[in-house]
Length: 317
Image (cartoon, rainbow, N blue to C red):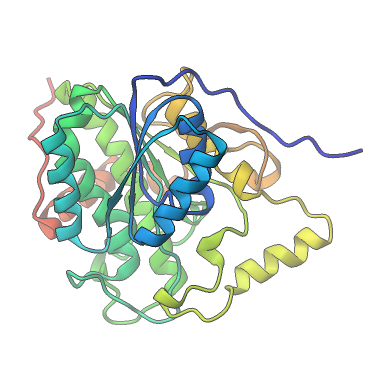
């Protein structure tokens, strides 16, 4: 019997503005296509303009009436983050959805961002942290839902509090886990502070399960000349009938978390199948590493200090 590919309905998003990072390929492009199909005005900030233009052309071939605009964004540069935020603030258009999807995964050797941060921590977490902070006025005016894409890796290892930049001994997988744990803690703390401060935004988390996406492929820009061992492992097991997700199914948890009227703030959504590898999206129990409110406050404070970008102060009643 043929397997049924899971899918979810998306409400009409006409008149809503959506910003999706990392939308030039893979899961991000799939998300962007679904938002465009639902009628959203789509803003695609991308690092590589050529890939971005190809992605926009693909979306418009599938949905000729799509309202899509392309902007440059390199999350590994706080200057680039600020420049994008300034452009969007100048447009003075409320943002109703922000999907923080872009990321970099496991460079074999330690690399740094433009600002000197370890590449994964700086790109996956700090870049998005600064982007949300700078766009906060537009997010508040749109009463936005913000969905931050973490990973099953956030259920492994820990934040290396004594050496956040991995200066003493770099370990790619551990640094990747740290970046996703930090990002998840931020997303949950953002929802708490919004509630306490009356910001009017909702923040939740998603993860795509396990799929051989472009994050695992050969990527010259991170010094990886061939697919990761994890990608080869996934492909080998898939060939033997072990079910993993695809780019089309891996996008569903983020799509559900961002658009479903049933998705809530402060929650984690991921695939509901075996071991959360694949399957229809559903709420999942928060990973143990994400349950410590004191860690969330600590990573928030550290992130403000490192980026030099601050959110409004919140004084809970």
